[in-house]
Image (tube, rainbow, N blue to C red):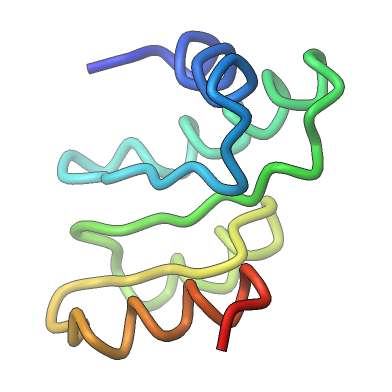
Length: 92
């Protein structure tokens, strides 16, 4: 487990294009805004956030409004999820 600040710093250090956060204990509504804020503080708001895990359908739009570009909940098909991420990265 990492704090949002640790994840943001590591993302900046590694020069990643996106950060994937997994939520299994309903922490996504507090952790995602904290991660977005930590990235902004590091002047890395261009790093995209993806959320996966046990995310209730009613939280998907809220997470997207908080800055998540994709949300993959239970039952997501791995191949379709991977294609969605590749499209987000501009890879076809």
